[in-house]
Length: 220
Image (cartoon, rainbow, N blue to C red; front, side, top):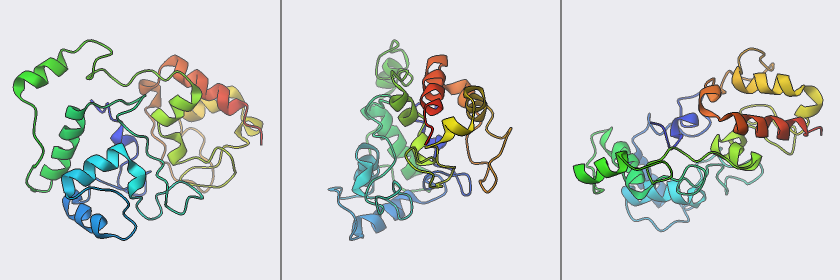
């Protein structure tokens, strides 16, 4: 159900805003990254590395994918067991198992029993299987939808998309709203059509309004 929002960013180039984990053999890559001198984590194997990359993504940042100005020392990826995404341990194990199995590698994580999976499926809203909680602030909403993976908020620097430090001085609130809901309606010259076009089906009305209001105040 895309609760983890992984595919918002992890897509094949040129549309991806993060490494293409579906197109790579993550078990083989994990071994390479564990041996990289830049790796700062504590994982010992591929499963541990994949889990760690979800819980503490800055332990290893793939070259060129770090936050702007961090020299690839800080990842823009949100920690996915925290709000607003809040994946459970079972859900993170399922992602790990998928990334292992898709290339024919052995699945080394424990998969849930049918009974446990049924309990998660039947969990009420607010339980571990609930959809990501609605964001309470503009900052939470932008983290939930990974806006900062593509847009610098405090400068005009171009990442995947244009910098937004002065967007409120260039666009009206309605134009900002349109750029989120229908990003291909008006393209900024020099940028690829990389922004997801389905935010209108994923954002709550309040999340959208908080982001629009926040950006409308960004006047440089």
